[in-house]
Length: 185
Image (cartoon, rainbow, N blue to C red; front, side, top):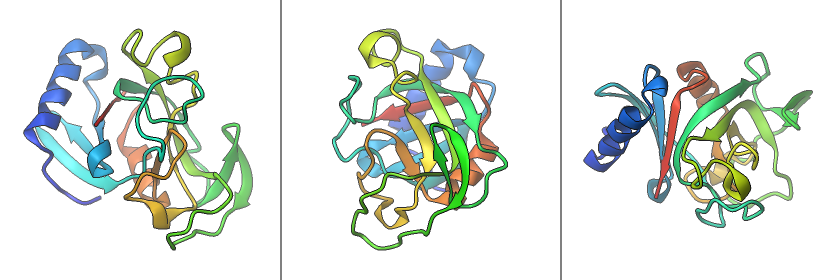
């Protein structure tokens, strides 16, 4: 995890989310800045570190079947795969016990593998990312590992927040069920 200071804007978004959702504010939080393709881990006034990520290649948006990354305040609803191996593939949130080869190059593959760890998000803002056709949990929005590590740092997913496998394993250990996850432009 690289230590980089987030902007005042991100810190203000984090403070606002902690104030609005105090029941989720007792744990480290993740802030995803889509324009930077970066995830920050914060606890109180401290930035614990940052990771490169990959959000949707279709942009941001909340609608079901849009394949876009939803914005707003979320929390970690479920942590899946704490005992899975490095680059182990998940299907329907179940371990397959299959390991995929990591792609370090730029070209996109024809597969959309979810690997190593899953942090399944739930929206906290009614009508924004919770409920109806904008429900992040119902859309299966995750933070997860990918075999396409060469695409990390640029928009490449179909809605989720992708991370390098070692990074998502580290993040998985840093966040708790109920930790805030804020996704902003």
